Length: 129
Image (spheres, one colour):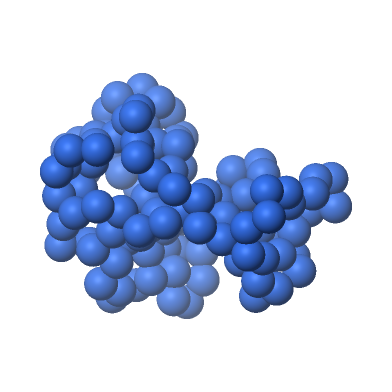
């Protein structure tokens, strides 16, 4: 993958560029992430200061808890971002990156809260919380 990692939403209204290599992909199986995506949230962290968003006026933020906000496209509804309020990193949905992404799946979190309709496979580390 080259020096810039790009991607965007389904309709193209929101595009992003990360000037740093994203961390490993993390699968979050908590109930909020499952409700937002329909399965589980697969995202990679990038320093917020390394991310440029084009079409930012189309990003809507939903504060899903006291400490967290989730960004999505207001036109097509694509889930794009997850960020701790005031945090130094932003999690970007792995599927929103252009291909080839060069991303690597690292581990799963909140596995104790996963849906009852699927199994986690692949042998990657699974953390209960």
